[in-house]
Length: 128
Figure 1 (cartoon, rainbow, N blue to C red):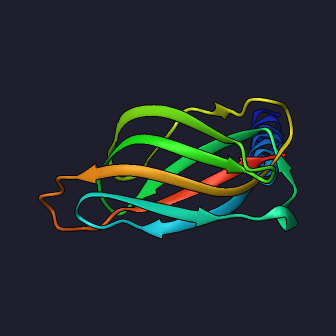
Figure 2: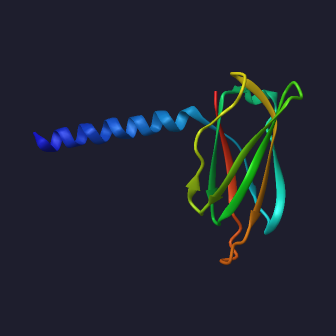
């Protein structure tokens, strides 16, 4: 009895994780440079409208200062992050203003002081 309950619990939890993974769409990734820099991820109207963003960092550490989201209509939203990401960490869920919006570009401004000499890979995900 306990074994079957355990297997059902594992099946339910894996389904929940799979559903949550499906809600986030990868918008793009960049391998960041060392020092102070900025990178741009081009999204475009074909991807549809988004209401939330999330950032994932792998491979190295990065100090993220801010994101600038440029929408399809030309408006820009500057989001202050001021967060030190360690490798393998992620951001909080970032709510975008104005409901579902088409994103043209996402620019992120950062610096790295990575003594391990591993360049971080920053991936941005969006939720419809």
